Length: 160
Length: 160
Image 1 (cartoon, rainbow over the protein chains, first blue to last red):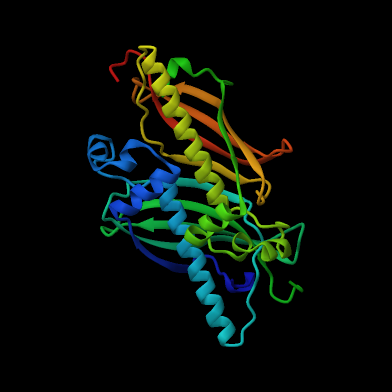
Image 2: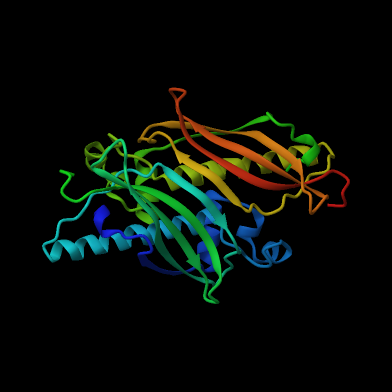
């Protein structure tokens, strides 16, 4: 993870892409969101989604996976260069979680994050508070998923 | 699913409980949130969580599972009584997703939902718009998880 000072507003990071196959969509749905339009192509076609659709929680979980793996890869690369790596605080939650368009079987979603705001914490000056707008965009360039994550990020040289 | 007219503000529904075992926590984390404090008891103890902690997305997904299964069970019971069952519209998203306290290995979380607001849609009079406050509470009675879900709910006799 980067330090607060290395996170300018507007900074954009690509996390990677994922293709939601019918098998993956059904596997997640059986475990966590067993609604008919997530379990059957036919029921999906009859629904407002117009096809077998991934659970919104599946989309969120895949975004999280790619975000975490990308952060870990960047940390390893920074450590290999001999740089200090920041350890983030817990996230107090998310705001504005939106499923804007359905993710249908076969869709490939590219996930990315942009720093929307960054400010020093008033009560804990060794931390910064950063808002990340994380998004998913399909193979047609359409925004399908978005949420605003709030994170505590250590400031450089604050003894963190 | 119930019709708009059967959803008074303040109405409360229990979805069921789930015990987050260490195995389940690690299995979800390996797939979707491979951060160290979700994968190892020792790393969890060294973290701000103070123990092996479930991914927040795991908590959300289990809540969704119990909510969906409870809705399906109630639908089957209503159908068995010969009652009409409403078919809900898609959810445009959630607001105020909050992880208030860690969910640690061995914790049992009881999930429930309360209707916070209900109003007719201005643009589509055959639908109502209902906000549900969904929560998770641990075995010590502490609120650990909360989100506000917005749903389109059909009105009775509106041809839905």
